[in-house]
Image 1 (cartoon, rainbow, N blue to C red):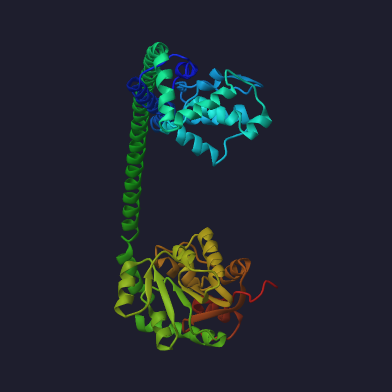
Image 2: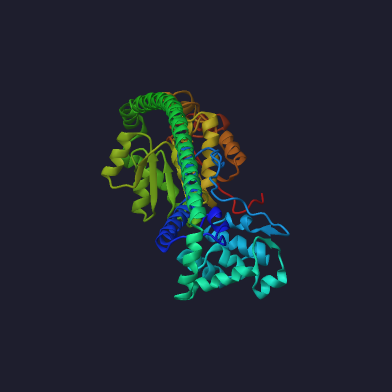
Length: 480
């Protein structure tokens, strides 16, 4: 019931039974509306919060500016109350606040649903619940003064007695008719005001949501514009990088093709001045005993394998080896002989090989093609890839032979500079190897008989070994 209605329940005025039943129905409908109105505030607050999170997900979370809708007053703790202070609450709020005011505690799990059920069913009025709590044993101990509530209110229990309750309520209802009519009008006015408050709150919430939608649309538009600008910049950068990459690839391809323009020329030079495959194959067999002495049968890499004479000699001796060369024509020739070869630059390939993984590295007539800095780098990579105790065999033209140093060396225009054996020994040892032997090989038969120092020197410088080989070992330990 409304506050005004409850205040006049003890009035001596009366009302007929039909009007009383209509009033009870109206009261039940009002309770439903109050329950809905009480839930409306929570519903719209949740709606606004969700809208805020969806429309502005990147903004820090703040509570919506729309104030909460409250259709019931706030409860205030006091030392004493007037009955009207409690009759202004409804449904659950009424039962809870009645406990807080009269018994000075929160409602228990048993009493709260009991009183709430009786209030909602119409069996108990608010005055009945207040009277029951105030004059209960616990209420007497709390002894909270409730002005307007007396023990005479306990006689209202007689209204619930069959037949007798009806006979007692009938004259009272008739006497209270004028007051109830006035209260009904006030209730109607109060209900209309509450509905207007709810409507205004809904309109305010809708306006706030519309404002958020507008702000979100504007923010989305600006973000989309910024994103589009960043995307355009990214596209331009990406296109520029692609163009640069294409140019680099084209330049690399052109350079790669240019590097192979001399492949056929070098093959022709080698065929003309190097000697036949059979001659070279027979000459390189001089190194087989070196490998045998070191106990090396696998893990051999031949750098600058050329036509593959050394690889073929190793295979015939039952040794496992791989060759690398940059000349495509030479690689094709080796593959036609079923030799294990790879087309690659020497440093590029060596850098792909794990450290301490090879047993031997050989390079015949390779060092003279390299600038000094590249030769040093090559020796460092060989040292890295060789196992401790692994062998390095470098064969190169011997400039001590004057014919080689002054003429034959330059028959190959790709040669850089001749390297004397003593210089090569220093270079190899400076890069961490131990020189085991300098093999002077491929001497030219001399027509001069050695009779004295002069004839000996002539034979040495004119008919001496045309090539030499440095045989070096990677130390097994770091101890010199």
